[in-house]
Image (tube, one colour):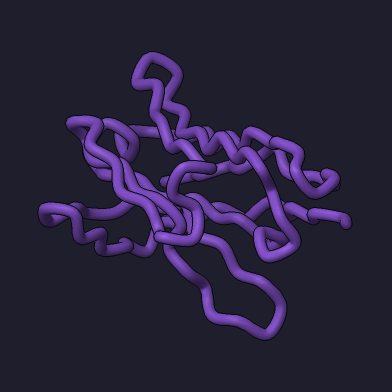
Length: 121
């Protein structure tokens, strides 16, 4: 059974940093591209960043230069380092296992439960 478990969310002041983690079970991590999504209240879930098996990364324009996605194969863990956080970054963040076609990411139906990030002003 595939399990993705996010952690690391919390309350942070604007301008601060957080690092999210997503622990993956089984072979899902070693056989899939991975990504972070987020969903704010009343908004659609949006792709934040993705990383291919080979390590190439892609980011939403809104987070470029502030967020860094990475993966540790030895730990079966996906990370999202978030710096210079602003109010618009407040959301529930989800990790996903999926496919990459060039820079295009396609989500598969493997989702974690999400972790809340709240940025206070």
